[in-house]
Length: 209
Image (tube, rainbow, N blue to C red; front, side):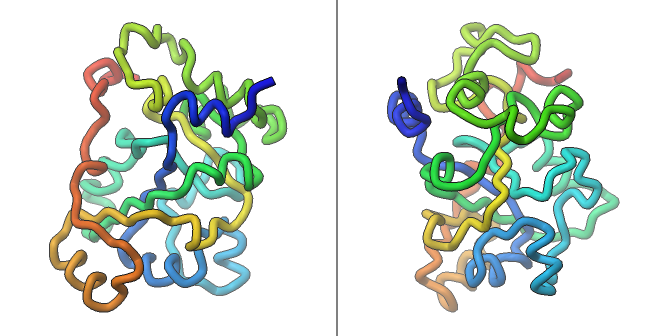
């Protein structure tokens, strides 16, 4: 039987992504990505991206190979949120088999996902479902590369700390933020690159979903 690691190799998947305000970066680079309860227990001054957490999980949200732009974009431009810079953290894909994670074919807060137990969303079959026909779409019609999940909102939830050793790069869209980290924390591999601040290539298929 195949493994998640073998499925990643077959699909050429090598990174997961997590977006966060730049104000969180110093703490993340020191402590890693923490679940919300761990932030509170350690008195880490982080504001969650989504304080309501309708996914009902004390977890870190990750996506496969591209950020969930349908959530990321509104966070960046919302008039009800403070104006701030954002970062996209690239995480090694081995988190998928080295940490306690579950797989969601769409946003983890969707009723189709959040009413399932964490355990029911684990394992190779659930991972493979992220790349099949789902959310009313036929994958072949989207002409996606193999490494993209079908739904751009498909999520991986992780229940454990993701240590900085798992980080491969941090992408920022502001040149001054980039210069600051290159000068003060050059080991962090912060890159000025706006690639992940754009919609995915199939965005026209998801305007109403």
